[in-house]
Image (tube, rainbow, N blue to C red; front, side, top):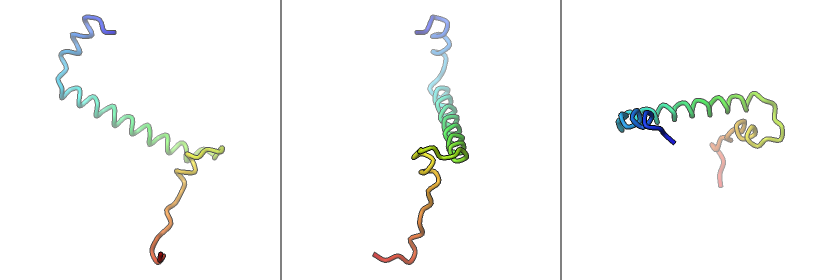
Length: 66
């Protein structure tokens, strides 16, 4: 999987370095998920539950009694 040169580079990374890389990839993934939501909202619905889920509005519950 890794050759000797790649393992040498990887072993020089500290736990903090790996945590920073992980946080960066997480932020990047969240950003692309946000872009996907925006794109799904802009595209016309094609029998896609995902778009309908994005467009739903919550009903106000004030004044309703059980």
